[in-house]
Image: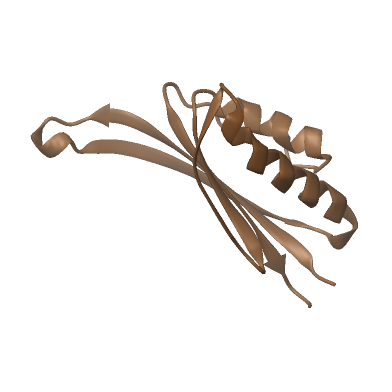
Length: 117
């Protein structure tokens, strides 16, 4: 059995720059290890994120999966709702809060096996 490494990256566009449509952005990243005992929460989170592409509030940009993990990407108007996703899945996120970025954000959540197999 193994634990899981959950990584959340929230990127917000701060300002558009004129030449060539370049933009500056800021990214907040945090990773936590979720112990095997919370495996059911990991499964709930992944199932919930897989079905979010039908949600009106969150547009799924992409989802990748393999035998060892998942990678989800969303365009999200309010990244503060990520805390709700983790609460609904029953996963304890240290601090329980996520940074709030004004404007549109890109959210990337990766879930993979970590440690012993």
